[in-house]
Length: 147
Image (cartoon, rainbow, N blue to C red):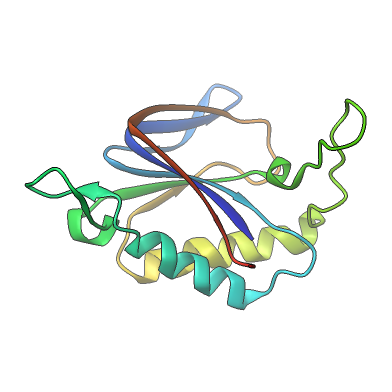
């Protein structure tokens, strides 16, 4: 699994003009799943994301986690994170998991975050979505579950 983590002051996702998820301060997560991912990958990433020390303390050092600051998460499924652009001009998405496999792991990942007491909002899996955010910092990281 692969997650793009963006520290955000506010964010929302809409589908066909309807807001499906909206947060204040916290993290926007773009979540991709590949073929050999398992629940272990979701467990690893949920723990990693919840505990990443990327929020500033009183000394303006990134020493606090989302759990420390009581932030929220906007989680958006994004198969294009596994797009391969090395050959030709059109990305290949052969490394992205099929929707029937990916949706379960995406939902498990979000449930694991909620189980940690984090408020999680989402987009709509498989839909064409519009994501708006105010990136804070900016702080943007890519976290993979595999080496």
